[in-house]
Length: 208
Image (cartoon, rainbow, N blue to C red; front, side):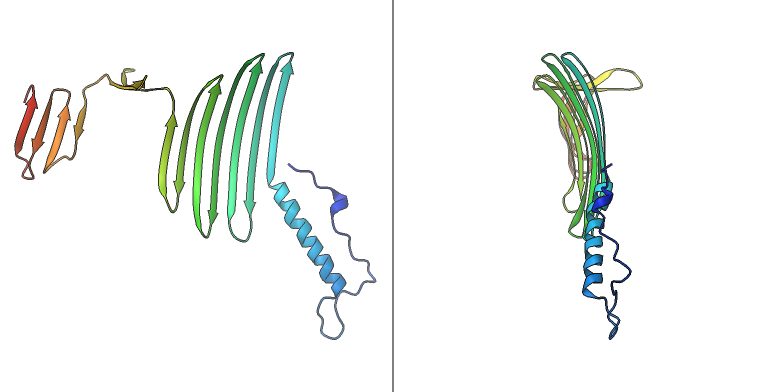
């Protein structure tokens, strides 16, 4: 949390300063200037107080580990923004590894958006996952990795994978353009094409 310097707080007007004009009751120039300076100070320092940073660092010789958390919540007359970021960095001689998790959201009259991401790096290799939703552009999920594996939690069998530019399926597959009417159905045994009346018109393969 940012420190607030008490000496930066605008002075309190002395008791002998006239605060309002006797003829119409409106604020005097001195009182108006003080209110303006107080409001400006509050805007700056309230923004600072909504930002929090926590850092843990440990080092010994050529090794170092750092964990940092950064959270922020901001609002003004036009929108709101919030974020939470956790990052980890380690180093031992010339070996490095790092990771970051972030979660952010913003809302404004022009639109809103929310994002979540994970990034991991070890030496020259990295992987990441990002999810994004915007009020004006839909949503998206992005995954970056040199290999990908999906395992069935019930059988512990790897059912799908990607490596070296090749996709692998370790279970029977079914690809279909629909469940009824005109459609094409492709399995690991055959290919079938149906017309709009669900009549099989073309069949290629085995066990037809």
